[in-house]
Image (cartoon, rainbow, N blue to C red; front, side):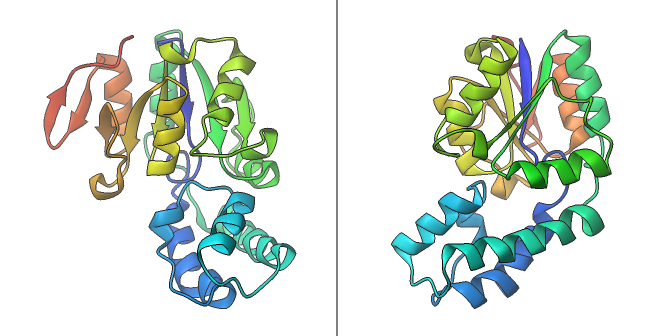
Length: 223
């Protein structure tokens, strides 16, 4: 394992628990005529999300107004509500013990990422930070993961991505990485090589080379 790449929302910070109801109850009802399930679009960056909604639904606002609503919500979520995932520090330490580089790969704009890095003093935690703003296409396209791997000069096929969404898992998988599905099992990516329900599972996975799935022990992610 040359590198571990963490998604941000729902992996580094518990922000998805706030984003999902905010989208369901506030953002989508005011911007889209039809009902939208937030879980179907988790992992998309806000620009790609607007394009997707504009193509598949009846959007009631222009791009600028749509992004402004997300920016306002992001400030609230990242500066007032979200907390660092329990066990995240231990997971990073375990990756370091295996001499793995540590990266952050997020669909969020860099200004949102900065809110998280500043609030939780994480600027020195990551060897590389890649945002969907850095590439032409965001998740599920692999470009942002490939950008992060290139920034660290590591082989994607010897890297692990920790993701909580199907779109994120598809991006990492397309980049050639092993995938750890993180969080509640019902929302964990179906294509994951292993799953971890919390930060403690991640720590044990990296420390012991095993993943936890449906209460059982799976083969490790050493590649």
